[in-house]
Length: 189
Image 1 (tube, rainbow, N blue to C red):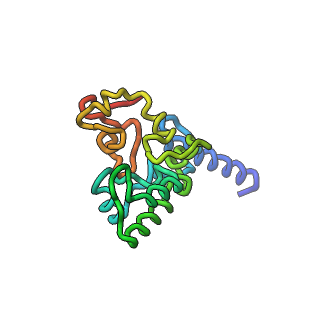
Image 2 (image 1 turned 120 degrees about the vertical axis):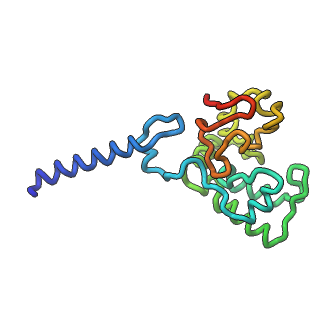
Image 3 (image 1 turned 90 degrees about the vertical axis):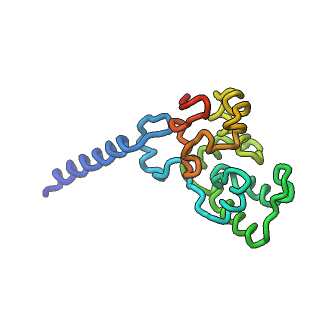
């Protein structure tokens, strides 16, 4: 193959690769984006894959994925388990250290992809709250929902019950196109 044919073939291959990337990728609004093809392919956030965390924390509430909060927030929460939102959630030292390491190693700001990056970017330099529901990204994404759809809804009760509306929450999938609010049906802003 002569040099000119090689250059043309390379340009065509690069164009096809880029076009395929755009065709196979989309952002949260369903718009095609070449950059999203080069980002980590996992949609949403890594699911919780540790039995200890699921057992200890998930026995009282939804086992939130570590990437939903920054490391500093997880550290504060883990250091104050004797008063965990009004409950004593203290753990044996070995379990505490294992869960703390899991949370900190996978926290937003340390898990460098998709949703955790969006959470950190939206928060900017603002103070870090202790609740996921007070993170700026969360507040923005849920701002269109009325109180009667969530807090006054006996099938949901709280914004902290992620899996009541996000059918794939336990798998780390929070796509706005897969929201189904009990008593109200599919929701898509």
